[in-house]
Image (cartoon, rainbow, N blue to C red; front, side, top):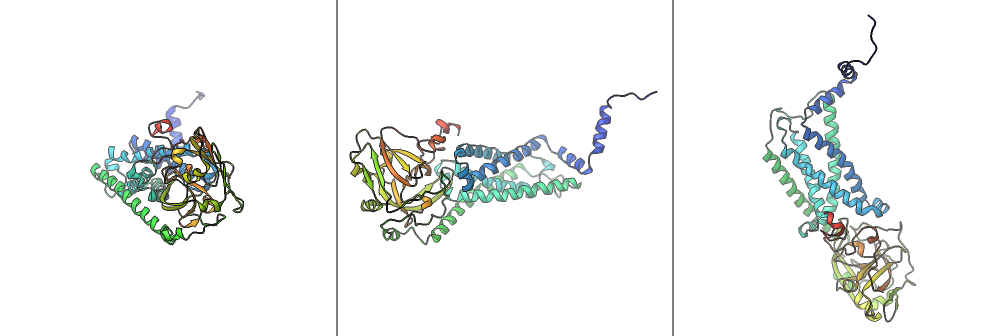
Length: 425
């Protein structure tokens, strides 16, 4: 009988496909089938989330990337936060669904709990507006980055070693007793210790960072250093304060001539002003020792700011009755922001010309910058050259790009939690 043409039976095709696979692939697939479905999906989700976290974290962490993608920072931060929450939540999977005899080797789940637990604590401190978490911010930013690098190294080791072992036909779980079971209570206790250790480590890291920064500045926080500060044109000759990440929205730092620079006070005033640096130095000088908070999470504690209060500047100009807001313009030609008259004339708000006993560096706003301690740093306009008194609020550079107009500490990108964009949190 002649052979009939037609598709081969399904069993025949499956056998042929299996025969075409390498022994290594067969062993790897066999190992994968031993895992319960929930663990397969948990690992798959982790593999999807990890590159998202690394990319968005790099944009938030490294100044060059931060500056290049500055218009996308609000969205980048939101993606990083929510992907991080989902990633850290995967720690609950091995507790809620113990594997029994198929549990990972102790080194795997213990290392994962400690590293991801530390990332969860430091990430919460950077994101949360809760006062207790904000106290950890000085150490959280740096430690978050270090833990990320350590966890990435562990992931590479974990994945490569286990895949290689499975391909060779060994047991990737590397347990000495295949039928041993780690109790759920033990794993939960390990996770709690990891979270507590993250809190302690973040606090210690922040304290060490502050101590070394103080030593590096030679104790610049001493009041005597401010009293001896030069009282003339500085030309932006100071050095950047350690701990600050330096940003510019124009791709460079503007220059100025200290002999011709003037601060203009215009708009709804009875007497417009044009003040030189020498004129500013004749006004009453004020000093504030306050932390600087960036909305992306990093913080520099205990900065000693010296400058003039805006109320003293406005006293000579005489605001008109209709004046309700002040717009601060930067001579970079792009940046501006506004404060209400009440916010701007608070006692601790300064037009600063010195920090930590030295003239401002050009990168940090020389010769004059706004400093608003109760708000995030994007309200503290650098390179101020003009104050305009107006009737209505004028949205600033970042507010046109999604940030909230009132950037009080503890808000989410300047939006109060539960309203506006902050309603997502």
